[in-house]
Length: 206
Image 1 (spheres, one colour):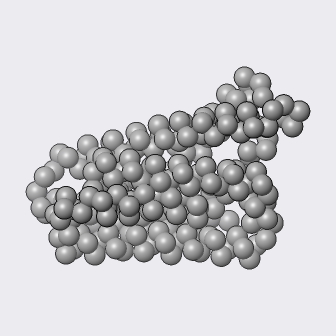
Image 2 (spheres, helix red, strand yellow):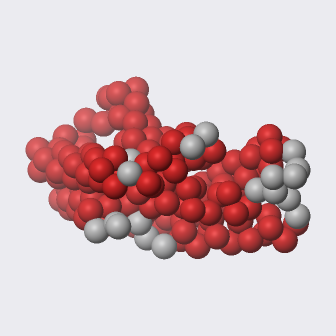
């Protein structure tokens, strides 16, 4: 892999991540609702999901999904319903004032947040399309395959993680400016709406 190809991969990865999609809306929703830590945990889960997608695409599973309209649609709608479920659950929790009890549920919350990031990433058609359509374009079949994959995986993790972290810090800062219970409830509604918006984006992905 040449230096120019590596830079091209960074640019492509950055553009795909910067464009607001399900992953962006999910981490923003988590940060608005629960703060910086939850947003960052969601990113970690998403990055693990991305690594799994990359591995699946390299062994041919991604190509099978891309070639089979039925399998792709099943995966897509699983992602739609999962994101919608997260969003509605968030709104219900905010309405009940459950946000005030999260401090006492750190371990459960961390697991839920990691799972949300992981499964939302794994069920995101945008991610599948990126790795299936583009990943092979940046790999030189005549060079060390393991080394190239490792470089692309580390690069993708750093680029995606950095950009999503930026979204998280901005959302969390906005949340921290308002401490009242009423404001926090509204942030819960907004965060849930972001997740539902992510489900709509997945539903409209072709």
